[in-house]
Length: 558
Figure 1 (cartoon, helix red, strand yellow):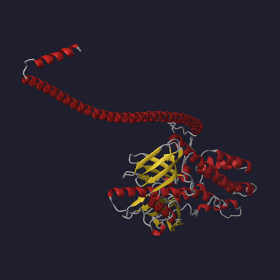
Figure 2: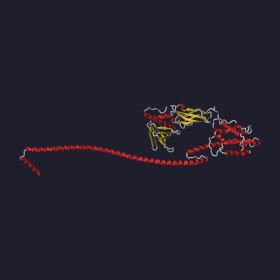
Figure 3: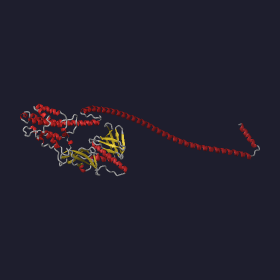
Figure 4: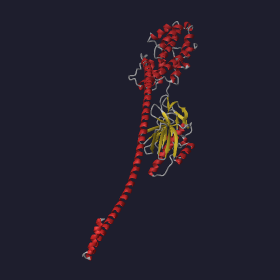
């Protein structure tokens, strides 16, 4: 307060002093201007601070927005990370389950392999000693060698059984003269010669059909029991090698008449065996033809000996003057074997069986069959494995001409004229109306599903599956969550294995094969298989046409 008073007093004194008025005004203006200048500077500074504050507010809003975006992105990343973690856990679980299944499958296959090896060792242990008894020990104990030798053994035993039956049938005609001529041989001066002829008949036929000496010994024992002079008869044939035997000569002449010029003797192994000595080891020959057995059963061979009143002497051997027609060969002018009225019966639809039948003439004993497919360009495709008179029509035959070629043969392996007849009255094989209607409905719908069985490739194991066909491709979903999906391409093919009426194979673009078996509960599994094959092929063709931009064409003609 003092200072203010002093200032006021100073001002008052200065006012009342001698200072001029102009100086006082000048100093007041300077102070005012200075004050105004400072106020303006402060206002400018305030405006700058306001602008800076506004910029900071804008930047703060931008930073907040970026922070929100980053937080949202981090949340998405965390969610994706959690999903990846869950997928990894699921994949690990599936891998562990798959490994467990593989381990179980390996264990099962190991047991199956052990059982198979045990079964194989059992077969080998039983078959090898059996083959050794007949001098058929294979050099290598593999399946092919053992099976081949077993086939040979079976063939030999079958021949031996046939020969034994033949000898038993012959004994019915040869034992009667010994019993009926016991008393007659003592009265007639020709009795020794007659007995000798009968004994020679036994020996000659036994030497023709026997592999050992059992039959001869048995006949000699019967001779000793029934005929007192059998020892003389036996010595007559065995000891006197220079004695003329009309029975032997006539029988050899009959065999010589059977072999015509230009015919190899090797074609008649049963006849060639007459002059051979019985081998010490087992010999396997071709089965004796039916003509030899029939001629051995012919009553004309023993009629001259069974009838005591016959005027023909056994030394003249009239029995073989006219050999049986079954032993004689026809001349070059004999007609060739042929087939008459060859025709094919059965419905010519996929899934149905065709049967070829006809009448054999001119001595036809067998035929060779070949089922063939004729294309429109004239080419011919022989069907692999179709060599029987019956044939199962499949989807492979649709829209083709199906025929059978028959080559007749006779007992001399002469070939007759080839006979061919077409199925379906020389028309193309087509689908039955029901199958064609189902295929057209499937094409119109653009998709189809079939219940099938999928081959696992292990020991003929099949598992239930569903085959889904769409416009772009197909998929196979099994019950164990295994899914096979593939799009149609030019290399996708569908094949039908021969002899397996309900199976088909889909070959993918990578060469992988998927074996399927029709299993939709229908009694006509074969027809279902063919319907699936035709549907797949048609979808493949349509898919390729769409890629090329071509017009749709139906797969087979109506």
